[in-house]
Length: 370
View 1: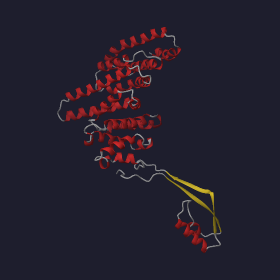
View 2: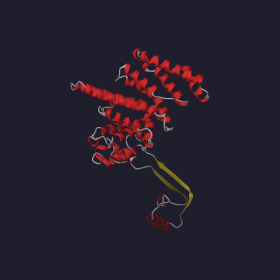
View 3: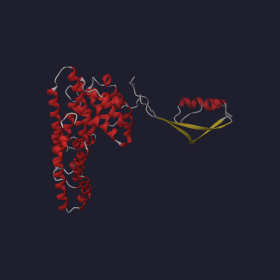
View 4: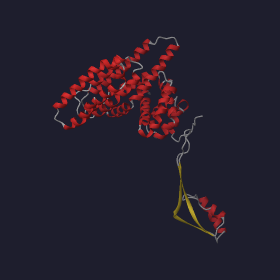
């Protein structure tokens, strides 16, 4: 049963300690219990004190005990934004503006609250994604940003114990077969406009969790294929549209890697080089080895004139390709091996001609590994 109203927020009470002098329990218990005692409380105490004039209570501003309460629950929440999201079918489905407001505010919900309700939040977000209120896709990007927020939290080393929970959810509990196209479009919109301040930040956050984004996309398509088989449909057209959507996304990523201005784009490109290889284990469920090798080649060769750390991370992604599923398969290895030799040889030649010690320090250890 899901709670539909927020529990009371954190409570903090200051209790005054009395210094008794030959008093009865009745006088003590009727004395003001806090600095915020009401007038009626004071009057009551005053009348009692008058009737027991020989018994007095003295107080000191230092004699105070502070009591704080904190709700620790995996069933109840004190966050109203999270509560509305979890009960979106009753509280938000008829109000688009309020729905958008809640999704925008979700990124500010506390991390601990989010991981406590991980599966429920995922179910709510994917439910909204395919609901009638989002028929035109107005909420796609807000939902995508919310998903990135959750995945970013789970990827944080502080919450690494929740990664198995996320893996189990994707494999066993995730059921949104129609999510892939929306997620691909939202990701593509970010990658296609990487330099605006708002998009740049959102894009970097999304790149950091590429592994899980693509895992959800691929899992969604697997569920869709199962439905097509059960309905007796071939699914060829849907499969073609799905792959075209991914190819368009990879083209946008390649274009992102070829940009040389503004200078701040280097940070985004560096993140892309760090995380790109992590998506190939799941891509192998949709693409044959030859196509996977071509995707890797186009991405690597789109990085033009790399220097410093960018050059080091380009070599690192090559190393990750060599140690990952692309080299485990004979067909993709045969295609990729020749290019790897060319890339490493080219960088070794440039290293000999390089006069900058910074590039030498970054690149030499990686060349040895390659």
